Image 1 (cartoon, rainbow, N blue to C red):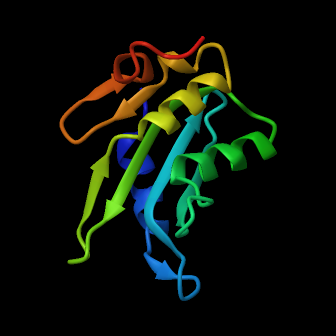
Image 2 (tube, rainbow, N blue to C red):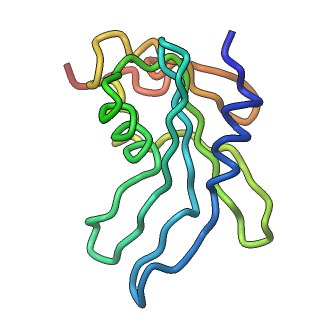
Length: 129
């Protein structure tokens, strides 16, 4: 059983939009990844004007890979709205494909959405193989 409440809380803790420079921002989206070993890795997005930034899921996955893991069992991403509220959002298509490619079984990873849980496979039925 995936502890969604804990994963969501971990992502919410680091979801803190901030300016990095006159042209770049970070932290409006945060993600938490749970691995098959029970470890949680988190990350935030970095938004730059020339598309060199990256998504929160990429940052969390990089922390996971750095720690020597690559098998994902659960992932959640959250976005902090301008009014301060936080909403759960699905990973973008690039993130879905990226996470699938890190381990042959990651297509089975559970993804938390607002009203249900689905697999990466369900969100990306025609993934690149």
